[in-house]
Image (cartoon, rainbow, N blue to C red; front, top):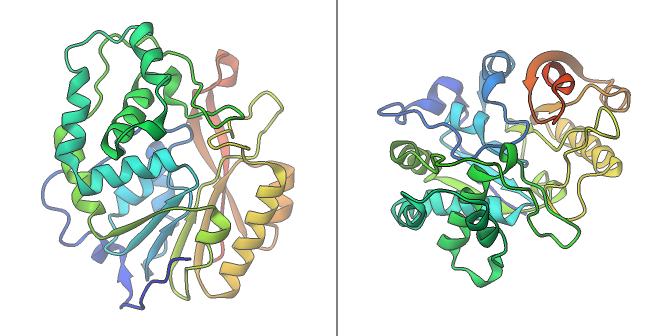
Length: 291
């Protein structure tokens, strides 16, 4: 469990203070369900004052990079994802050098699958992070999906010469991450640490709108109905502790019932991960807050 010392409340304006010079970073990874295009809508509902910022399902980190809080704890149960964040925070130059081994090369299926076949356990921390970013930027639709053995299994995305990173963005992201704690944790553990006045943003794998729209296998075992129910209990526990909590998910009947005691709103988002055109376009997203 993460223990964070009590510090003065930070406002949203203070959260960005001292970090506004230079480029404002954006996510260095593509992520299914990323919140980049929803930031304007989400920002309206972020509390004006809060203590430490917690994000137990960090994903691409769009909300975190937008807020640039001075005190933050980011976590995820996906170890490859957190290792990539650690590399950006701790050794951005080394990470970019590792990614430069692909510079000038045409990204063929043969190259993609040779990298995908690598066993991350046999790689250094930097090489593992570079592999994660390479696969993320060259796989189909930037998805992250694993099989029952925990092996990345997204097919090739047919990108000839994708941009693996933007130097200025990596350096800006590294700066914002400098005083940020990073943990490989299940949300049940991560949600124990926040205390009264802290802000917790929960953006879990979404409850499927249908049996064919499930993209929840970001880690071995996926994210099932019981996980959604357990998360709703953690939401209630955080509420009882006096935390400010915001959650994004799909507007399924089960979720509306689970969060019926809190303020629920609909947001509009464009989604394009369905292979069929009819499954793309503007869709409703559920936003839940306890304040």
